Length: 242
Image (cartoon, rainbow, N blue to C red):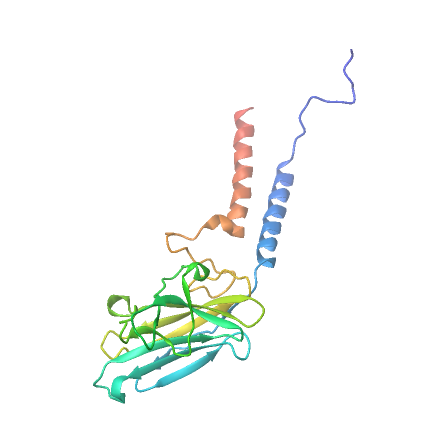
């Protein structure tokens, strides 16, 4: 049987320019899909508001009217000679929660956890926010923002009827018994966002708590480098077979 002259056993060859076009198109589509699935992260910008004294309290807005975070500093007896406390609360139209745990204080039974940069907020244990705020420095629970660990992030979750939204507030507390503190900044994501402590935008790549570096393969630059590497490999292979 004669071979069909219309068929060729020679494998089809994809030119280098076409490989680059495929790689570039793939990188662009991955980049577009990744960002189309993401919402926005809303960042407060630098606040640097200091809290000290008796019943020093301030409220900051979140997504909708009725959604907020509230910070308070209180001193026993309203005197600078007594110990003070730092307290945090969050509100949502439907519900609100604080990344934290229950303590042994009967009248303020919640403490806020001290989160590190890069921790995924949604993975933390949460407790329902109460009418009274949660301790994070001082008070009968001691708080986790003390001593060498006097700075970090408080995680929170709130719902205004559209779904759960997550956020963080960056705190720096004093190391004395007065527990004065400063709210540096805060941020929160839209419904469905996976926001990490310290993340200020959807494009920002914040390392996971256990990672030493930011994974480059998730970026468009990493995909572009992969395309260039593929072309270089093909050139070297072509020269070796000549």
